[in-house]
Length: 181
Image 1 (cartoon, rainbow, N blue to C red):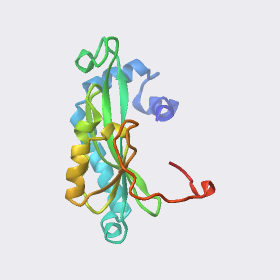
Image 2: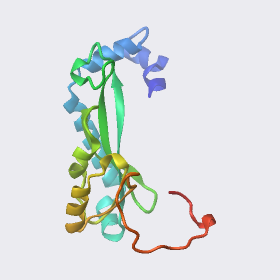
Image 3: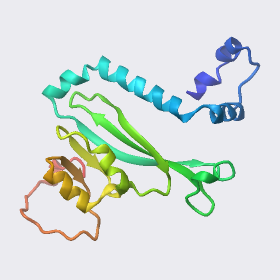
Image 4: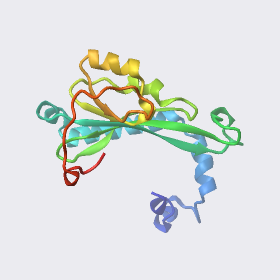
């Protein structure tokens, strides 16, 4: 993206002698965040239409991966997003759909302050009983897991190291058969 934005052709087309990161940053501060959300939803609709998503759903079971990433911000300019003594930032919670035919695309997202705990946002993503959810330990909330199981949702997550559990059945495996954890 930066190669495109800073290309000489684009600069000439726009009538600029140059474009700097600081110019872009100042302009982006003026753009309402709702515009980016609207663009995201329009692109998502196009992806679903191009991939004939609704017909595929009837035939296949998608895998939906839920994760979050912390995006650092400048503490001096973004005090509203302070989450540590010397840092500010936002957290992007995203759900990625991975279909069996290897089509993958973002399906839903939420942006929160970086200090927000992931597990508080799991219920925002669990809206489809006809898929398998996969998420990281940050989203672990055992009470929510019980509710999801009672409602017929399927999910996979790694347990925390201190989780209390009991082994129901043990399977013998050949280490060469295990591709990943």
